[in-house]
Image (cartoon, each protein chain N blue to C red):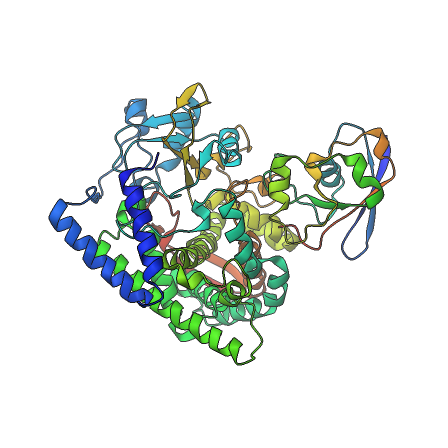
Length: 470
Length: 106
């Protein structure tokens, strides 16, 4: 049964789509912002935007099971999450939290149960959102990660070519030379912040290439992505000002409409289409008019930007953190560089850059002795499944030659499995190959700063000092 | 016991022995055949054990189920005799079977 707000979102999407031919997309979004502002003034907000103020996280063993709330965005920032999820896995693997700031939700924390939920798209819907909370009111964009089959299948197949292995083979040398350039520019023998200098820079360059976005404006892609994934109402992130989200969406719509029209004109003039995302969308019958469906257009661009940003970036940082916590592994790696591909999988398991995906039960489902009711929100905690002792031996240890590292859940399983998995692996493999060529020691100096979010497992500061190979 | 031949995209051949009851994916992984990942461990949930069965053998492998069909439809290299190796349970009848590996697993 559609809720009132879902109906409102549907109507709003239809109105926007219908008017998109006559009103430029960024103007429509600015209009939406005014409309939402007026609506909130007249009727009050649909729901209050939660405000998160950091306080010390209590020891999980002092809490009653029902009071455990793993949606707390400081759980990861304060590095307390392992004990919380271990207790849930052991004592309440399918756990109900009825009072979170994001509303009531179920947590599924064991590997096997997560696999079941992820595979069962007939029982659990990915619609309308895959994050725990809601996006800013009025900005309910449509993306295929949050669609069920068959609509999902059509949309995904039209864009997956951009990150398909065939396309990647063409890009390998480009990625390698850029990675080399960035590593060659790093200061030696003095501390610097690895996050902006390496992780953000490399992922930003990659995104600009995939989207054929103006290279000198690539920082915009990173900023949009950070704010969208970091909305307080959605993931408990640090961005509480929803007005800025509208400005971002309008800015994005403007930039990408311009890019779309430019490519359209060049193609009409006889130019060969490229292998970038927009060219691929324009080549496919199902998506060649996507620009006339603005919420879907922005949604799918957002998905690719966010999907290729926080994930790889934080695995680029996380690998260094892991190596420094388990220094014997670096010696192992130097002795056997052929372990790099397996180590990449282990980094992605150990870091789990996105902690979960959300589903909504389409009917009552029995799982782990609990009854999940139709309409309930269900969170699959990949970060916990990747540390499940029932699946992985010594799961908290980073072991670069771990036999079943590839079985990690960080890419999800089933129809929504990460489309960019091979690109992510490629970027990380090249990064480590190029690191080994240049540096003897990569020391983390100082405690890493972790981001505030229940969704993104990331770092904002990672001070590193490099010693070159002698 | 029987034999199955895996042919990589570059035509390199690998012959592996099998016992009935195992899956094509498991045989490949146990024998370290390059080009088959089997990331989900046989749950029909990742699509990384895609094989293309030779025409003559395809009928013997049965027909893909709904879940398998869904995963295969996401593979760009899908062919008319594509299967997910984890969903093909080996029988003695398959002794001598040849399967081709795609250029890439998704």
